[in-house]
Image (spheres, rainbow, N blue to C red):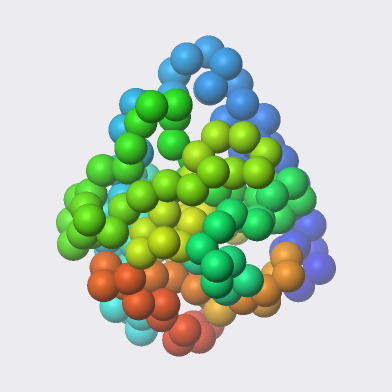
Length: 158
């Protein structure tokens, strides 16, 4: 588990560097698409435009972004480009999409009020290695299109 966490942290740092480069070069998309995917044993869950699973963080029960710095290196927030909004696809309800300010700057996409994150160990569409993981100060779960938190544990191959 320690080796997996180290790899996840390292990957998060590399993703952060490439994301910063994309922002500075102006190549970042103007729309962030939130969609759905059916995951065995979990049902239909939220995913980003690359099909990567999106998670919510239980300690954010007051619905504001608290996963920053080291936490955000492992759980990259779904940032919205300045002036952009999240767009709904699949079974996502547009009325449940929103955003929340990130304490470090920018805005993070939300669903049913929950800030949305990916997990650095999820490298392929359909991967749910972050599901029911207790890491960085709390539990992480996927969300259904209804906005319901799915707390089902799944074997992830660690």
